[in-house]
Every structure is written in structure tokens, then in C-alpha cells.
Amino acid sequence: MISLPLPILNAALILGAVLIAWRVDLGNRTARNILRALFGVIVTISLVVGLRFGYGLEAVRFLQPVLALFLGPLAYMFFLSFFRPSDNRLLNIGNVHVALIPVLIINLLRLHDTWVMLDVLISLSYIFYACLIIVLWRRGPDALTQCRLQQIANMRVWMIMVAVILTILSIVDGGIAFAFWYWGEAIATMGISWAAVFGVGLTLGLIVVGMRLHGQSDKIAPKVSEVSLSLEPQVNAFLRENHRFADPNLTLDKLAKRIHIPARKISMAINHVSGMNVSQYINQMRLAHAAEMLLKSDDPVAQISEKSGFLTRSNFYREFQRVYGTTPAAYRDQARI
Image 1 (cartoon, rainbow, N blue to C red):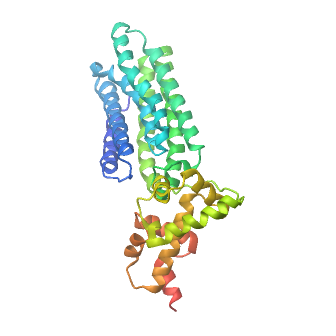
Image 2 (image 1 turned 30 degrees about the vertical axis):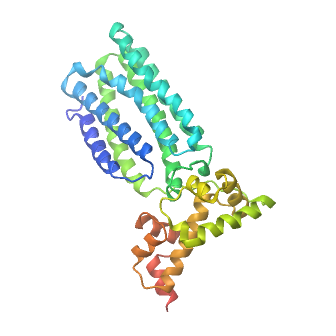
Image 3 (image 1 turned 135 degrees about the horizontal axis):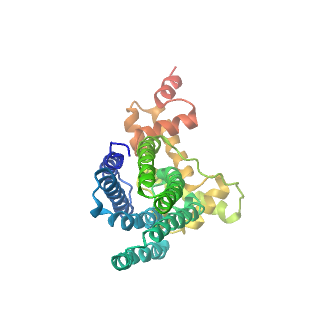
């Protein structure tokens, strides 16, 4: 085995990500707490693997499979918390899974030769929850009513990434379990070492990609109806009044409650009239407002970004350059020449 206990290194990297994620404001307390729990489980698993295979501490072997069973349901419930409150009943799927884990632990204390079957169960759990996350993703961006509008695109990218990671974990975990059963601990330990190398690379990659990726939402073909033609102007006027579109904490659910129109009808009206989803529609308003302020005021770009409803300066610059083909500062300078 590689002399450096890579799972320990991986745990340290993930712990660093946890400290960063701990301060991230997702605008959703439930999601934030679930994310913290998920990262905590991942860190603990990495530490357990490092202690067992890096230092030969066999006393912790019982923790690894038990903790692994929490990964799937926690990842699924994290994304589910951004959907409509009525979908909370679906949390029962994850809750039942979590509730069954203590029962499984009790049975393991009585049956010590079930580790292979437990690894199979863990692999199936990863696949099961990866599929559930894909099902959530297929509902479309406007179903994320509890997510800040400017975070929806990135959230959908993360849903795909997590589903892929769970699938990879299923394959890796299944392969290691087979190696233990067929070749013994020596070969399996080597596989764990290389899996840890992959884990370090994956952790670093996720940190970098998570900061740079900007997901592209699905394009919806416009199909105008009379109802949409009547609703869209109401929504538009409400958003423009007192610059409500610039509220960085605005979600589709909050918009629906304030305007007293069901979220689904708002989504359909905007899609039919503009060909955009709600997130893109409001983002367009924010960018137009920022462009107008750049021309009419001497306020700093950072201040204009904040007044237009953008949470981060990097996101504002990226979106502005995508739409206007230049940076905010260059846009202002060119207009004044």
C-alpha cells in the first residue's frame, strides 16, 4: 500500500471544503444543515479508511459501511430541500432509509459474516439515490422553487455531478468488495489506495469546478397562450416595481406568494411568452438594470452588481460578459467615448 495514508489526506481536503461550505449562504437553512451533515459523514469515512488501512486500526472497521449508507439519502435530501414544500413527503424515502440503518447495525452485531452483502447493499444504495437525483433534475429548473433564482443553473449542474459521483462510488465500492471476496485483503487494500488517489483528485476537481462551472439551463420553445399573455405582464410589472427583481433572496415560491399566482402558472407564462425559465427571465432584468446604471451613474461596478441583485461579483462579470460580450467596465467606457 502507498505509504502515505491518502484517505487521511483526502479527509483533510474535504474538511477544508467543509469549512468553506459552512459559511456558504444557500438561502435555505434545511439544505445548509443537510450539506454539513453530508460533508461530516464523508470526512469521517475518509478518516476511518485511513485509520484502518493506513495504520491497521481494525477497531473502526464497523463504522465505515454504516456511515456509507448515509451518503445517498443525505445527498438526495439536500437537493430535494430546494423543491416545492409539497415535495417534503418525498423526504420519507430518505428518512426511512436512515431509520433502517440502526436496525442494520443491530443485525450486524449478531451476524459478523455479512460484510459482502452489506457492500452490495451500499452499492445499490448509491445507484438508487443517483437515479432519484436524476428524477429531480428532469423536473426542470422552475421546479426548484426554494432555490435562489441565480443559483438554479449551478444547482442543476451539481445535481448531475453528484449523480455521476454516486454512480462511480457504486462501481468502486463494488469492485473493492469483489476484490476482498475473490483475492483477499492485500489486493483490495491496493485498490483502496488507488481509490484514495482518485478521491484526492476528485475533491480538488470539485473545488475548482464548483467555483467555475456555470450550468446551462434547458431552452424551452415558446408557445404563447392567451392566459400566458395576460399573466406575464402582471409578473413583469410586479418585478419591476421598486426593483423587486434585484432581491438576491428571491425564489419562485416567494414570488408566487407575493403576487398571489401559483408558481406553476408563473413559470408557464414566462416560458410561453419569453422562451426562458424564471431564473433566466429575472437574470435578464438584473443585467439590463446593471447596464443602465453603468451608463447613468458613476457608482463602482461592485456596488452596481449588488444593487442589481447579484450575490457575487464573479457571477455578475460572467453573466454580463456572456450577454453583452464585454466586461462592465469596458461597456461603460465604450458607451462614453
